[in-house]
Image (cartoon, rainbow, N blue to C red):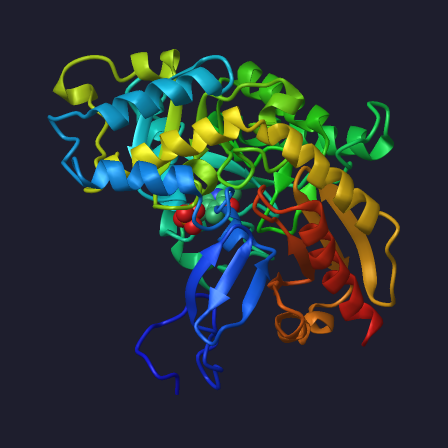
Length: 421
Ligand SMILES: *Cc1c(COP(=O)(O)O)cnc(C)c1O
């Protein structure tokens, strides 16, 4: 039995070894209570984009805490929320004009779904109550979100009969750089079109993680597929939701992944990197068209309002995070990390390794069987690297302050694990 009553996530609790106790962190490094230091390959579940203890973010929080830690957003407002909403409208793709805040990625997705469905219900399309999601998708752990995750390979198969029924289209298979006449891409597009043709009458919205299906297996797919999604949504009167919780803030090489396909959604959800990983916060952005669908008397109000929505500390640190991202030219840093990942992973092969993939500041080794990765975390820990595999994937999504040398240390451990087996 572990020595505390903390219940850990996605973790078999039987025979659980005592998890390493973290005392502090600095840059890309986690400092353990026993004096060891670990290079963090995961940026704390992909959110700590500036690493640990960034001075500008720390200072912003200290300042804000001396002024206002929290106040309800129902009926009241405050500068940090207003400034952040304006900033997000400025930096996100064209058309997104209104911002609804909540407190975590999953809740941000719940807000997006509810917004899409309420929009259809009160704008003459009451039969449009389902969503079309994509196989290999991951959109969060609350029950609404679970119903949008891959129903076969996802983490929630056990609950299938209990969840809301939605529709699924096959995951795109044509790679990120597939040419327009790639036969696999043509097949992907045909399958997508067939799903729309079959289900469009009941669809409120289509939801997808642009360019990179993250927790569903690091599927890095063609921007052309995303362009076709936009076209089909327009043709069939279906709203388009982009889940940029994992991809937003540079992870795929551009500020938002959808920029690389030059398409804008009707609704977009941001979280993870939004506060530099310091505090829970999500933003669900919507177009003017959606907003106008809610414009009216009490019967048109959007029926949602989490207690901690727009928390001033979270908004303030998000503003500081975006400021650092812009002022320190993070896209350039990310391009350098991308080059290192390509150099280190593109030609790697070893027994059991099926493929390697790189996009932006994301590098992945896919293996043929998940069992091959059983000893990985322990091996990496002994080498001073915090690396977690899941399913058949070893990945790194580091903070962007990591140096090329530190990143090479992570990829060395990722590769050496297979060499020493
Ligand atoms: C992490 C994640 C979520 C859920 O966010 P939480 O803050 O963990 O609730 C949703 N969608 C994607 C793409 C994610 O990566």
